[in-house]
Length: 459
Image (tube, rainbow, N blue to C red; front, side, top):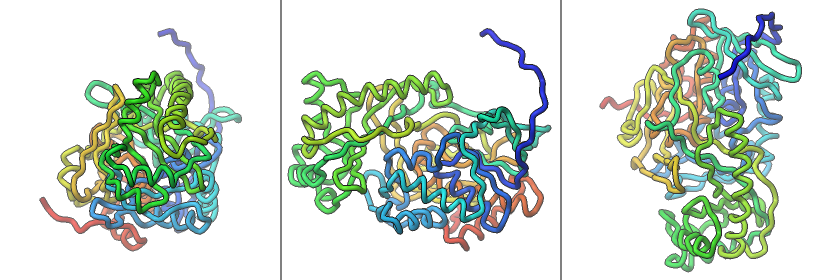
């Protein structure tokens, strides 16, 4: 590969803060809110012009409820949902036999409400700022380099929380990372899009009244008869018929998520295999191919699926939804066995219940495996190897490819963010590295502030 030599130069320090959060998605928002709760100087940097991440692309938030129907994600994530509800921009947590629970949110309201909450908490937010490099001295992370219209600048921080989703900071700081499964394959991304003019009542009743006609995977037909807003996963026979008629569809299942607005439906059916979410050329291919796939998907829905006869295109999500990239090597690596055995951890900082949900790196299939209850996420999985003053929250924590498929959905990521923010706050207050904090004190604070943790049971 051809290279050039970049000359050494002095970099202006733009800011010095107590806690720096990189990435303004579900985990980043809650991390910043938690870290700023008692007055620390907290900065959140985000490359886009808004916060919210995957909450802004038309997806419901999955995982607030456990497999037994109890609420297992509370605390700051619940406060955020409550704020959305206050402006009619979120549903209740709806039990779902396939996804444990669905919480529908209005994407544009997410951007506004999240920013309002950050401002009220005293968090400084800086948009249009791309993370570029980690500033490391010995084994300590001292801050980051950003790139923006102003050029290359430094931000120094006592503690950094990597909520990039791709372990960007950890990777650049020298933390060991893994990518994908044993063969390097990752779950394919999806470019969501929204249709208007959908008769969701006709769709709902067609499924509820004719369950033998419309295969809906693991969601009983009765579910659709009791919910005006819902998710459809299945209709495989209709997809098969459309494919036989010549339509090119990249998935085996129809996935439709009704919106909060009447007649609106978000479509989760594009699938772009082979996309590397950390490479700009590959991401560009993903966006381009996703848009190409929309034409036949939209035609399929209008011509084959009841309720879509008069549907029309409304908008595309602002970016392709990435399911998997890098995962850090941390103090502990969560495994598939941890998830399926409903494992308790003495250093638990969050509880999750979402199943193993692996969209196959090749083809259009998906594998789901449930544990029957819920499982803990340990603090050690947020703590990277080799580098001090850094925590990672979200889908890039230390876990295997299989375990990542379970903890990657938004509600657990928000819970991890809150824990990381509170841990960072403790580290700054005590003037220690985050790997040295008292996990017991962190757990006590999480419980005091309304988060949910299980009582530890030794195996």
